[in-house]
Image (cartoon, rainbow, N blue to C red):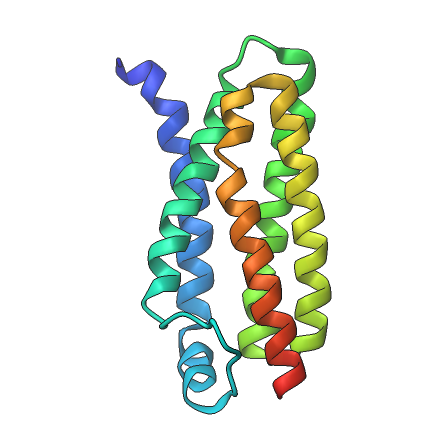
Length: 157
């Protein structure tokens, strides 16, 4: 793959990873406090799992967005990429609501919004590039699991 073809992949993957990294850095202290003080539900994985999973998911998001951005199907890709950016912004702010503000109920509702946006993004990606859509399925599954964790933390705390 030459650099010209690689460039959009680097852009979209680095954009997604940067959003995740920035959110992680800006919520690091609050995440540590959360880990030490909040009652967690059954099935809550160890803290180390989250950065590993999110790094993989952001990479998959970026690859999907790059496939859409480089697709010859120009009639549908603007909506798909707009949904990608919107869900990425919503994703970014969830960490602040959950960890920094510890507004667990609001964060759970925000996560429902994120889940719906990702579902719409997957549908939009499907119209442009089916593989790009399939690459988002682990993200939607993880968000479903995160919703369980978020709602349970809300109920337990």
